[in-house]
Length: 461
Image (cartoon, rainbow, N blue to C red; front, side):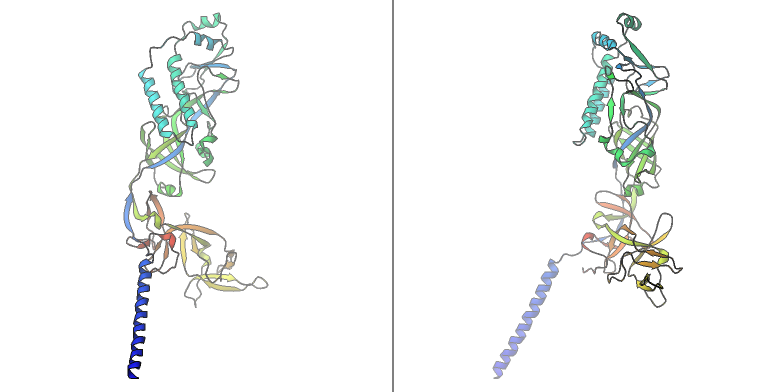
């Protein structure tokens, strides 16, 4: 009997040991296989990055239209300056002038070095700009090459022009310039646009109708003959993201590089809000207008400056949506530990008000210095969108406005805490953010894989 009782005790003890062993084994396996949070320690750093942009070129330009139809012949090369009274072109109303020039071309010994350089530069520019979704650039380049060759081969002085006109019954009308400027034979639907007129649709090149002229083209009355640029200053307008707008907010000038023309220059920069409500940058140039006269769209780089701040990986940046109320709507009664709002609970008769505590609130100031509180609705459903709340002075509002903030998840206290950040600059992997009072600080621990977590979640190392 004693032996049997002793054996039963050993069996129970062994079973308990096995159970404990299995518990620790399973717990260990679960711990090992559990995804551990990826934690990043915030450090100060900097970014130096050249930023690429595409912009629209605007100039002080106007179009000269034909008063009579006919065949046009140009006497001034594209990109050349003219004075008042300079004969830019003529319109041959019966086609005899074009026929005479075609029949009496002088043989050419070859192209000049200037023409070779111009053609080479245009081909290099085309190579840099070409994209499969912008095949119209092929036709633009083809036109410019034809124009340069036409200028090189056809712009010979015609001797005894007056006598030839009489003999061959040529009827044509000279078109002199009534304004000094630079002639361009490339025209489009954006001539006359001002900087403040630019909207996002203007950057879709397919929306811009363009034409190019060369000698021998037939024009109708009222159609454009040439474009005249009246002054040297010109501008590039380009779209900016929210982060870029913040990065350039206090920048007065930038180093711009236009690779297609080999142009690099430090120029003034100003920011503006377009009529469509979007942000744009405006670069102002005083040189190189002639080099860019046939271009409407341009790709360029802004050389990077050394932007310093707190360096945060992009994967750590999260967006949080909050309800927004004025700071005067947040209150704290004497018997409450948390701040909250006074919610209306009766709509008939005298209004009744109930205090609803809010666990986490965030004070945010706008650009005018006005204070607002950002908060999440309580998880118990005690406060909902559309509820009416009041200030101490009796003024009321409905909870409805929502805004999105960018930030990181800080875990210094062992749980996920959303900390708002102000992004100043970025590259493909990192953001440079500026520290705010009570916000993110150097050596804080934040979550790298922020999208896997939510605010308030307990973090286990």
